[in-house]
Image (cartoon, rainbow, N blue to C red):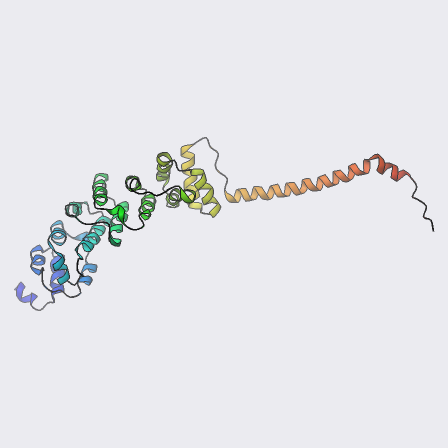
Amino acid sequence: MKKLTNMFKLNETILLDAIYADDTAQVSAMRGKKVSFGGMIFQRLDYGALSVPMMQVLVRDVTDGDWQKWGFKENARDTLRRAMFSVALSQSRGDLIDVFTAENIVMNKGKASAHCFMNLCDSKLADEAKGRVLDYLLAQGIDQVKEPETFLKKAAESGYAAGFDAMKSRLNIDIHADNEHILRYAAGAGQVEFCLHLVRTYGADIDVALITESTLGHQKAAKTLEQARQILNPEAEAAPSIAGLAAQVRVLERTVAEMQDNMRDITARLDDLSPQRRLDKRLAPPVQRR
């Protein structure tokens, strides 16, 4: 009956139904068959809900040739496996980690590679599982992607110190450039503990970052940096805000103006009290000759 029913279905419908039904035998039977709109199937799947056996079939058993039959380009297998891995990480599917780490997946190409690290930063996986994934990604060349500095920023934003340290050790990037831009990036995300980590581990200058963020009017970042600063030095006075400094400048300007007025008045009075001025006042005015 199942075979008869499938006769009236398109191959992509059969494949999609089999995946949703967790029918690994049917998916395996579809290998090598032409499936139209394979990309649509791939995009519609909820990879976070796939079982371990089904993910094993898709990751381990389905070949490049199968994916081509299913409507993908040549050599798409690793691209798809990287994408599936990133989704599994985004949904914190710790039970699927071993499915991917058991495979030799190149991780230094394409956006999907970057997404794997990005999603790892935000995942709710246990520290041990996170560490295993991080080790795997690094071993597979994740640090060789274009613009790896985005990884440092993402780790800072997520407060993922272990990932930041591991990536920083492999990258020749000055994290103190642009007035402590990484520290300021972490502060913008409200990561007080990570800000402390940067100061204690890498010697980041929190005062430079605080002045910069205050000057730029980034209140959230400035507040985060001030909190970290107070933790590092509880005895320190709170750093004045830019608005407060501006008000102080205005007060000083008025004070200076008043002092200048007073000095002019005093000078005039002293001038009146000088012997020559008093003598001039007592003498009769000179006779005007015609």
